[in-house]
Length: 223
Image 1 (tube, rainbow, N blue to C red):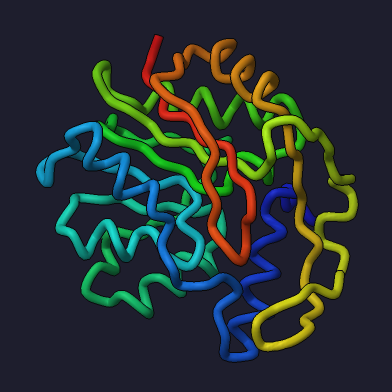
Image 2: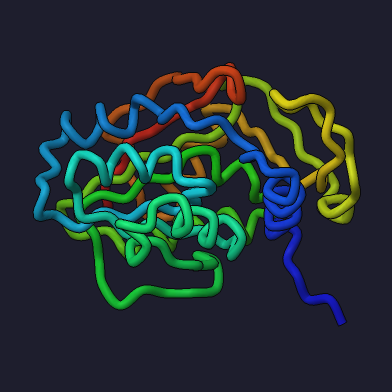
């Protein structure tokens, strides 16, 4: 019996791209990650956690600057890809489903870029926020970026997450798993954070072209 969760569909998307000899996403890092690290005084000796590292574009930049990072993803394919392409940091990558798994330590800084919008069900989104709160040190900070323009709301059918869909890729058209998406407004985003024990230190809009023209972000702390 197939027990895969809908949000694990990116595993199939990564496999398809990697079998073709290409990465799924681009390699340009998300500038706001390092900007937030510097702004909030995160030190090289602090403990950092990335949720949803994907193919490692942000982890690569953080590790390059000498930070002590644990980069995780629900996709074993993504983790293997990162270990293969960054062998000097192989031990920094680990498979983790933050909705069902736990870590035995807390962190000074946690970041998750384009992850929570993959979670459609309310209970999964709550689990994501709870994981962040439970693994954040008392005075720590977390950066959460999610796809959306702050007003529009929509969600896909999770039953179709593994269905093949043709998508644009820089190498040409590619048929990959549909995956899942839920975009919420800033009002909903803020309410979700508050209801799950997180307070917003700052918020705004960001973009990671060409993949994401519009991302909402919030830097949060424990209530």
